[in-house]
Image 1 (cartoon, rainbow, N blue to C red):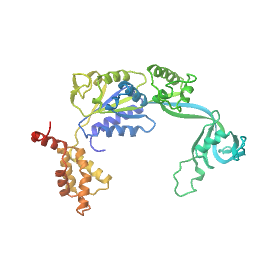
Image 2: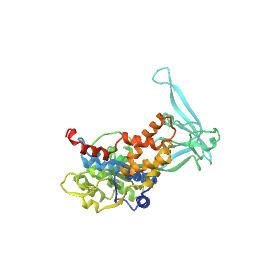
Image 3: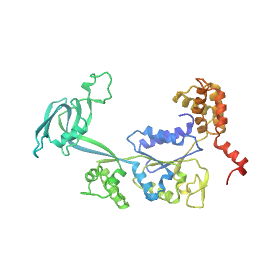
Image 4: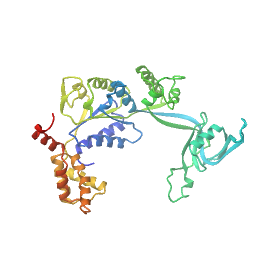
Length: 417
């Protein structure tokens, strides 16, 4: 990224606050003209936080639907941005696979084929080796995971679930090039207790338990995740799930991971959504909310009031606002140079400078969009590099928004209004 040093420094502080869990339930606003990198900085925050922290992007206009209430869509995205890390201690059989030998018998139903009656699996650890005789349903799980001799796996003793961890590192020198993840041979006994960590979001729990079946304990909630349903999620159900989640957080079984909800074009939300957002931010289970807008003082949708960025004043009071400024000429030159290098396009220095000058008069996005047509034109003329002449010709062939609006005003009588 280039430029926006102040905004990037502020975003870095926000990342540190999120990692230290000091930002939950707070909100941030990126405010700046179009093409100043608001979405880019939000995505950079997501990348910096890593894959373990939920990041839920959405656009303000997504809430308007003829099927679902606006507040329901907002709450769904709020819940998608809140992660839950569940730590369970399970009894497992773990090791490097030394053999897989299915035992087949004649089909008891009288057909000509044979069926698998059981499977013998050999597992090896640094401490010892063991042969297991397993149920045919576990053999199906082994086939689904595409387990082969030399893989490191674990089998849950209670459910029979099989998880392939990776390829044993003793096979690492077998090929010169291979797209495999190598892992060390497990330590300890083959039969052991292992802590299994699973990451889910609150929305996953909501959807899977829209019509709860069975018990109301935490393991029952988890067991519902893989059952596909499409049912209305009520506020009562969410409160029940929150109670169970809070109880298990208190017991140390689960850990809350507040993620990031990024709402672009936030000025598209109306007063009902803003009021609901105020309430949601006060909840105990609230993510970090990052808003972005390119509007100045404008009308709040659903009212006749005008407010900075089209956001009610009471919500603005809750926000940390990061201001993004238009790019300077030297920054635009650097951005265009990086873009040309990324696309494998060669451009002369004077052409790059002229393109940057066009960007200061129009917009950075317009200047970026001129690169490819100029490259195509230079190729048509038999040139390997974009020169200033191609940039000038392309800028005359294609108009930017401001130039087009000026022509419309000058020739208003020739257009249908």
